[in-house]
Structures are given as structure tokens and as C-alpha cells.
Length: 126
Image (cartoon, rainbow, N blue to C red; front, side):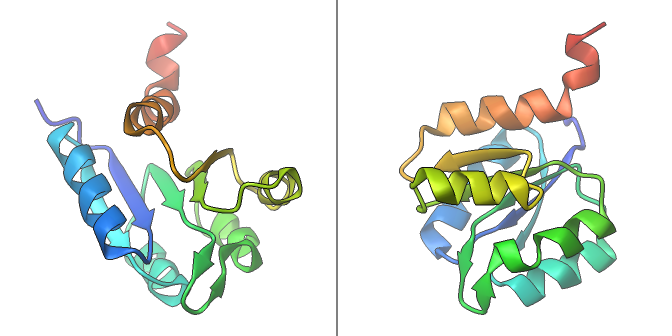
């Protein structure tokens, strides 16, 4: 049964994007993808994601610069998925509006579990 939860995946590495999108689709999620900041903002104008998985280092800039704009456009939780591993990077990501932060390389099962927690939070507390 498809759960119809929509994920916006913002990732510039085509292999990571393809693999993650395929895994989430196999779990029944609806996927929207973007490979740049501009594309991500455009997708937000035409889609209403339930969760955003956001890489920080993109071809047209650092996503931290537009994270406040993203948060103005949607109430969807933002899970940052990035190679930026330093504590100061994690703190900056969370302070800029990220709801969670995972560093690459990552465990796909953990990523799926975190997305599930965001999208099924109400069910888990009933």
C-alpha cells in the first residue's frame, strides 16, 4: 500500500540521488528531486513535500544560505544530508533551520528511519 508521503530530495550527486530515490519509492514514498538550490526552490513552488532531504554543498551554492527561505515556504521538516562533518557545520545547519542532520557516508536504514519518524510522528504518539 502506497503511503503517498512526498519527499523532496535535493542532491547534486546523481548516483546518490538515484539510489535514495529508488529506495524511498520502494518504501511507497512519492519522490520529487532537485539537483541545485534554484531547482529546489522551484520544486517548492509547485510541490508540497512532507519531508525535505537537503544536501548542503550544491553547484549553485550552500543550502544554508536558502534554508530560511525554504522554511518560509513550507512547514516540512528538513533533514540535512551532507559530507560536512564538523560539529560547527552540524550546529550551523540546525541553527539555520534544519530539523535533523546526517553526515555522509550514512546508513540508508537510519536515513529511512529518520524520515519515517518525521512522517509518522503523530501515529507513534497515539
